[in-house]
Image 1 (tube, one colour):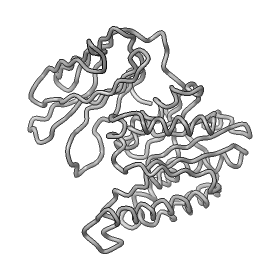
Image 2 (cartoon, rainbow, N blue to C red):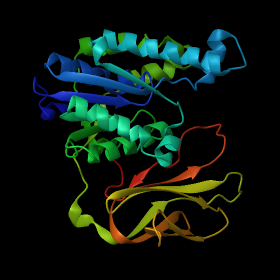
Image 3 (cartoon, rainbow, N blue to C red):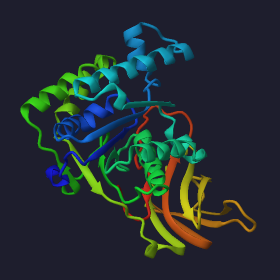
Image 4 (cartoon, rainbow, N blue to C red):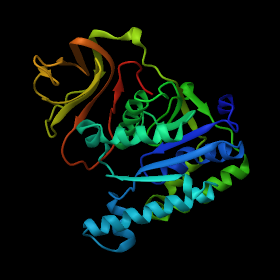
Length: 340
């Protein structure tokens, strides 16, 4: 049970979520329990959820969503999140909004470390003892990408061993891995009241949102799992991936690896027709990392080798191009654990 966390006046709880409404759906009960226990709390919402056209079209009775309309919608959703958090008892000074691009976190993650730099500064400033973050098992690409960012950021601070508990909003969470949060009837009522502040999201998805709000809050629990003893100069790894029979999409292997004292970010085209790919990637001459990929059945075998030690590695098969359905079949995977 979640009470094993022993929330009290010494707890410093950092909640980091991708979109407005995730803070309420995933942790509305936990936030109330932490505040009641006297814990220090900070909530970070990294996007404004502005790339959300269908509710906006419905509410504003417009078809074309231009840049000004998106900014207006993002401000509306930011205001809704602030109102929801006030209903949960969170002070305005304890809320942070980053304004990163909605549905763009995977691109930011694979591009460079700027987002992690901002998270590092936040972590150092707040000094958390417990971090609430998305799970890698969440099927929304923004959720799993944010988890990778947070793991990379924590590793760069003195809080690398800080306990984190992961939530799933989109997709299943295994019951045998879950910490189940016990909430009172009053805390459930307050959580539902907070959800009503997200009126823009309830307009088209009220039934789904209320169903998510009614779920018992469950979290995966992990402390730091990066162990120096696991480092080697070679890594062989198998990921699930079914090559499509009809090649309607293009794919890339996204890989982020701790190699020696640096983080290497890789994007390598992955052909649905070809069974094998070899690439030398990363900075340096010769390149710091050799990558081999081989597709077989419903798996993708990855081989990494380097002249330096290979530590933590995250990998994802990314479907490129425009998406009608935004959710991933498989998100990011971690070489140290199947999911976080």
